[in-house]
Length: 112
Image 1: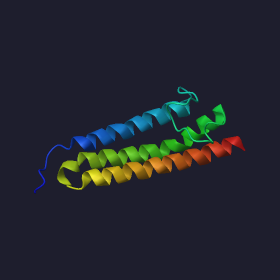
Image 2: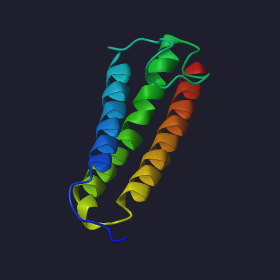
Image 3: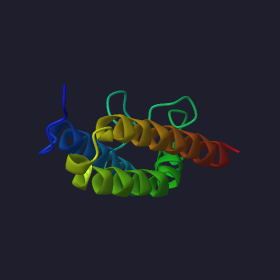
Image 4: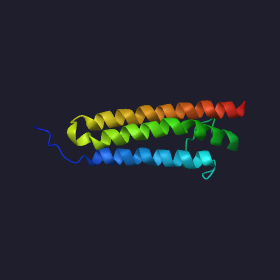
């Protein structure tokens, strides 16, 4: 079975998902999305107070932006790379994990 090079819709869906993460992180960091149980980085430290919620999301902004940039670049060249979907998923998971760890540290610093 040969790989047909062309548009990779999964790559664009993953890039859109990472963009959604960036937008939600930015809105929560700016205070436009308040602490809630549905959207945002909902981990124990960020849920303790409004200050921890905001601080955690502010700390997660850089990792989420870098992750989005790498996912978008990889999605742009995905049509030339047969393994692009696996690479995109790995990048997405890595930078989501980094964002959550940064949010954890940021929220903990706001608590103490």
